[in-house]
Length: 308
Image (cartoon, rainbow, N blue to C red; front, side, top):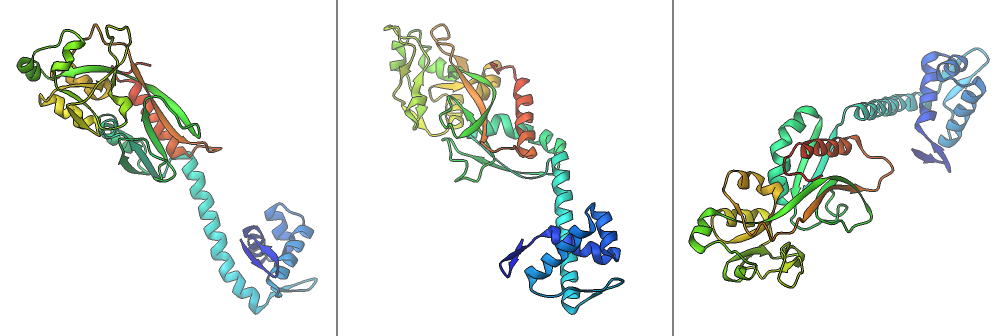
C-alpha cells in the first residue's frame, strides 16, 4: 500500500486500472470486476488524485494513456501479478502445509520421540522446512522464534495454547552392572548408600516419586552426579554410574531389553508427567503447525509407554 498526496493507493485500485486498460473500456472492466461502471470510474479518479497526475485522457468514445499512465501500467502489472501469485501461494499453503517450522523440545524428547519420526513427517509434508532446536529448560517461544514446543511436566505459562499429547511415567532405574557391583537397594533409606544421578536444575526434577517412612510420596535427593540433560543422565545410568529417576518415553526400550532395571518398584508412586505441545494464542493456527501437532499426537498415541 502506497501513500501520495495524503491519499492511499492500494492493490485493488491498481487491479482496476490494469483491467480497464486490458479490457479496453470502463464498462468492460466493470463487468469483469463485478462492479458498476460508476464505481470503476470513481476508482480511476481516486487513483489519479492520490498520484496527483492524469493517467488516462478519456472521451466518450476512446481512452488514451498518458506518459505517466504508461509508466504506472508497467509497474502496476508487476504488482498485481505478485499479489495474485501471493494469494495463490497462500491458498495452496492452506491446502498443503508449507514453509519453515521451528520446533523446540528437551534434548531427550527430541532424540527419542521426534528425530526417529522426522522421515515419516517429511514424507507426508514435503514442503515443510524443519528447524529443530533443543533446550533442557523451558524457553520463551517469542524470544527463541519458535512455532511449537514440546513441554513435559506441569504447564505454567498461561499465555500459550496447549494440546495434550499424553503422559509418561517416572521410574527409578539402574543398570544390571551397577546393581551387581553396588547391590540393589531394598528400602528408601538404602538409597543413601548409593550414587544418585540427578539434575543441576530445576531443583524440582530431583524430587523422586517414592514413598517414605513418614508417609510423604516425594524424596528430595542430593545428586552424587548432576547433569542438565535427562539424556546425559540416561547415558550415565546405562554405563553403570548410579541410580536415576527417568521418564519412560526415553527409557521404555532400555527397560524392555534389560539395559535398565527398575529400583524399588513397590515403593514408587504412580507419577505421570503430562506431555503437551504449546504454541502462541493466535486467532488461527498455521496449517504447518497444526500438521506437526496432529502428527505428534498420532505418533505418541501409538507408543506403548504413553499414559493417556
